[in-house]
Length: 377
Image (cartoon, rainbow, N blue to C red; front, side, top):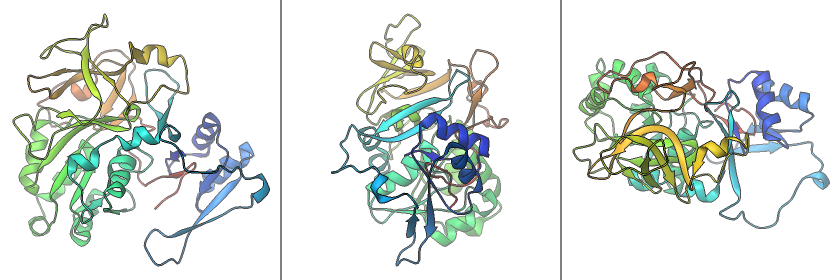
């Protein structure tokens, strides 16, 4: 399956479906762009309709595909079967296609890091077409038997009222969202006094120490810096709930994959020295499906090269210091840079973190995503 951005134009949906080699499109009746793209490519549309079932999230699927032509597979998928195909930004002009297996996704230890339990409620403000929202918000909650609350995309003006009426116990977001929430939270002491949050998570871009301090002061709960990317099934490392001296300035210890620092000659560096962050382990994708030639640059001696610059401190915690590849990451939204060098998002760790929105295919647009074609929740 591939979740797509519900704000995509017909051209963007057509490109995604063609590049994926999709067999069908699942979309709600109001997704005209998805239907038009499917018609262009001669793909069948499986209509997703809200059902009158006994619980929230009940839906029905309708299709005109003859049963005799529908592909069938007996038995459950294996851990190494592909579960998701996701496009990710990169240093080439062509988006990379990342296959993630069931094993890759199950090893992303967000639920364990947050110590999620069935009584937890996630206020899911990250879109489900983004690896952050899909894995950290949705799959982590489901794996713990917990609940997910799905608002209609991120709306800073509505966040505190959602938080109050839902009694959510945690949320995860990118730094730009945290800043938008902070800008309004200070004016609503009554709502802050009644929230039920026990932890707040930040990922997809560095959360600057000043912003970290403000969030923790305003909400009075632990704020966990995390590091993740699509190629690793999302979470790579995270600060733990018990915190520590590095809570503000690091993205914590590995939550599964092996993390090392490599120099420009392919040598692994000792703690304290800065270089490229590299990863290996069963959680990491086996390689890009498209473009295949990207794999030669992405992997070296079985290590996956993230393109991020950083160091491991004396405690083994990861400190991100920059960006080696030509990608601008502005508050968790990514776009290609026109010049090489560090991303503006990393230029100063003491900044508030504000920046111009990146031109992103992966994040930043409102709404959640459907499978194989857009769907709004």
